Length: 69
Figure 1 (tube, rainbow, N blue to C red):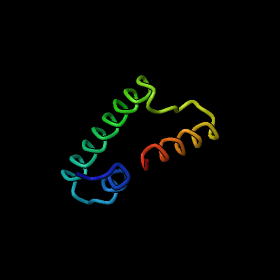
Figure 2: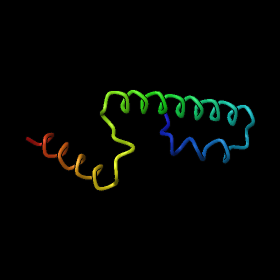
Figure 3: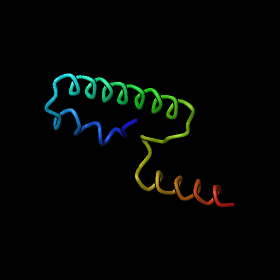
Figure 4: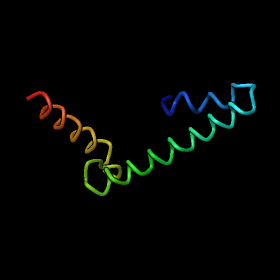
């Protein structure tokens, strides 16, 4: 499976219309899946998207410390 970044370029770079359609559909599926996962993470408090950049960095640093202990 392609990553989202690769899929953003692939449909525009292919010359085969069928492949372009398949890649475009896969890109759409990835975006929808990412949106669903983001909603879950936000609702469970796992991701603080609306926190300030400093708060996000502090949370990431604390999570990293917890992970290595």
